[in-house]
Image 1 (cartoon, helix red, strand yellow):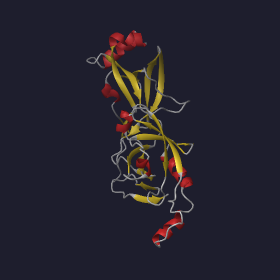
Image 2 (cartoon, rainbow, N blue to C red):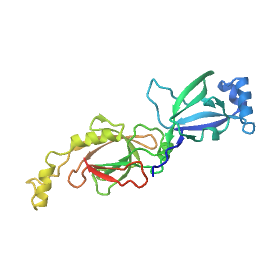
Image 3 (cartoon, one colour):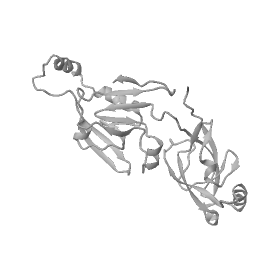
Image 4 (tube, helix red, strand yellow):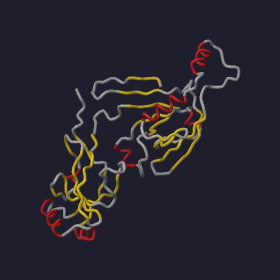
Length: 259
C-alpha cells in the first residue's frame, strides 16, 4: 500500500508572545479581539522564531519576527492551529510584518512513513536529504545534502572529516541536492578504475601501486553553523560511489545503483 503523505507540517518554529506585547509587534486592537475570540484561554500570538528551510527569492516566504494571526482565512491564537495540515501543498497565512498585514502562500512538507527513500554513498560518506529532526537541530540549513554517517577507515575518516553536516560544495562545484553529488561523483570517477579492478582480480597491481582516486576539496556546514573545509583523497576501488533508492510504497525494495 502507499505510504500516506496526507499529514503535512510547516518548516517553521514559533514562539508565543503575550497579547500584552502584541500591540508593540504591530497587532491592532481589532486583530487582538479576533485572536481572543478564536483562542480565549491562550491570549497570545504566534511569532516566527526560526525558519528551517529558506525559500528562493521572489516567492512568498516568512521572516523571523512575523506574527501569524490567521490560517486559510481563519483567525488563530494557539500553536495547535499550525501543528499539522492535511491533503494540501500549501497554506495561506495571514501575518503581521512591521505593522503591515500580509497574506502569504507557504508550502507545507509531508511527513512520510518511509522517511528516507534515497541514500548516496561517496568517498566513504553516506548522504541523504536532511530529515525533520535535523532541520530542527541545525543552526542553519545550507543544502539538501546531509552526511549522516561514514565508513570507518574510509577517505572521509582518514582526513578527520565530520559526519552530521551539510555538504555545500565539492571540488569547486556548488552542491544543493543529491543529484548534484551524483553528477559530480560521476565526473570525478577515475578513468582507470576498471583496469585497476581487473588487475586486482588477477592478482596483479600497477607498478606504482597507486589507488584510483583524486584529491577533492569539500565545503561543509556543521549543525552548529560552523563552516568546515576539508581535502580528502577518494578511493574508487575500496569505496566506490553508489546510491540506494526505493519507491513510495511500504513494501518497496531498495534498489542499488553504481555511479
